Amino acid sequence: MMDRYKLHFDNADAKQDELGLWSIWSCYDTEDKPTKWDEVPFPDMVELQYEGPNGLQTRHVTDLTWEGLYKLADELMQASGDLHHQFIEQFTPNRDERGVYTLWTGS
Image (cartoon, rainbow, N blue to C red; front, side, top):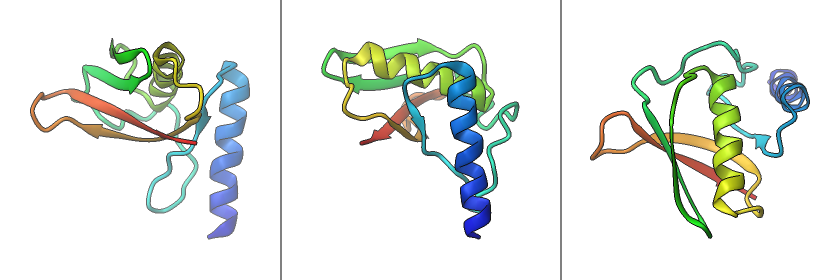
């Protein structure tokens, strides 16, 4: 299990370097498999939201792959002014608005 966990985050570190992103990927599935960056995890997602010191940031989602969500989450986090929470933890659907997801982060 530890080998899969390490492989997962080594994979994420390499993706962060490749894309030149500030944020750190901290999402993983229940089996701790490396993220398949071209996989589409949330086919119904149309908008991603993140709340920070600069208020609610929203972006229309054009690339539904994990890689696209990583880049979009990084953009939202920086635009929000929240430079304390650098870890991308989770994407959750909004119960009241179909296709709208919230980005959750950690420090």
